[in-house]
Image: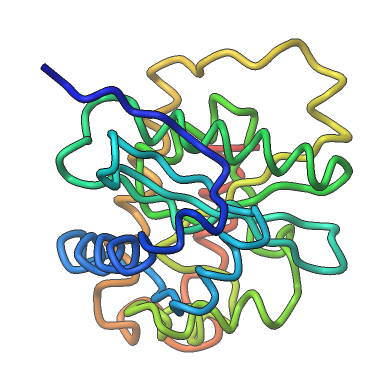
Length: 234
């Protein structure tokens, strides 16, 4: 019998889970090999004590986690560190945690644009269901502290050599000023997920090759990326 999972806004009572949260994130980074920025224990503790984190538990066992952080004088909010323990995958838990984090973001920062960076097709699907749209990095926060957080990612060199315009991650944004005028969000058709998959494959094909073969340095793939992004998403 599967354990019942409960999802909470984290509090000081959940601080003992910090070590397992960080270990689960680190293990996922090794398996995926696509880059997950390292998290500082003190920073995760701060998010928990500020009640800006979501934690999922199966009884007393850690099941999943996510936290929110604001940037650019609260004009932008990011949902970061989404992770589900291996034993609880395949149960839709990531979607439930992400939705709870989204609701917390809207409650704490109702006017802010909510964004995320991800290399995962599953996360792109969840974001789409919540109303996020793929955007270029120029539409995300320009807060330097946010981008410094990417320095611990194994793919940081890609971000540097493209002048912070591209990486393996895809930027996705929820703009409340636009989305609240629309009808309630429903899941995207499966064909749109195939578009995301093609986009992710294309970026891996370009960036995991020798950059000199793709134009190298500052101009790496710039025009190709702009045209393809516009074709797929605009």
